Image (cartoon, rainbow, N blue to C red; front, side, top):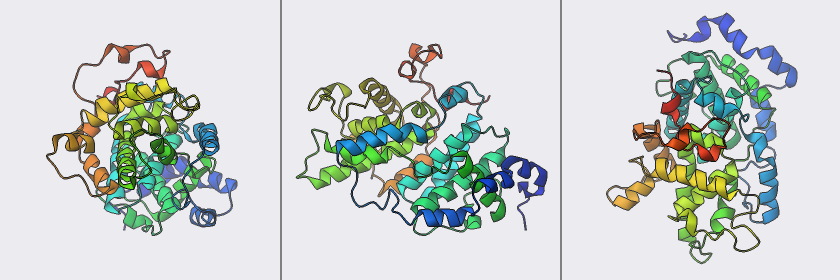
Length: 356
């Protein structure tokens, strides 16, 4: 039996959204079969050796823009042509379900990546259920890419989703999403850079694996929390990874020896001014204003840190200050014209663009 609020009762609206026959023309297999065959080669989470050489990092940087939302997406979020309230609700739900099933951290990051990339190329009606079915489809796809055990589609719809969808409709939406993403599901994410960037930090010693593991976990926590702040959409995955590594190490941006080694500290293709802006945003928002931030907890020595990235996500999903920026007055830099670079606008947030 369908949920009382199920949009399955609105068949014509559903069909106009995902147009299953369009996606079918792109591929003759269904989503589950296609992803199963895709797993014949190792996924990012199962590759035994992380990138450790400069050439590999260069190739990742060369391709990372292909796995980002369209360039005007952040502008549209800020100017309310994207329903950012619905986006925020969708991401909150994804993170809660991710924590509920103890999925891998990369699953959450991929879910939001698919969500934003689709939303940057396809306009959804401004009401609840289209965003909800997109959320379910993106989380399902990410889980199929990364998880050894994936819940049934009905079981995935937990924690007060608002709407319950029949599996066949979710599968149609999955095909729609994959078609709009050009079947590029193995995205380049900040996680791809972390091992290499952390190894460059002065505080990271190869003789101290515990310190490396701590920095890796702290950086991962920061990266996961960026998914709920629209400002980070303006930064490339390599920039987010570099900024997270610096913040996790407790370093000031100005203490990094940027000209050391072969020309640039992390990599010559990593823009240090963009890293400065991203690092500042992390310090001001994810660390300074979130009471459940691991870094703030460590500084206060007043609470027990979550046992895993799943615990961090669960805490973040319950933290109101992670949804919106602090109530401090907006700085002059945030009022710069849209034609100015992203580095000039650091304080816009989900709360700045939500519908009244």
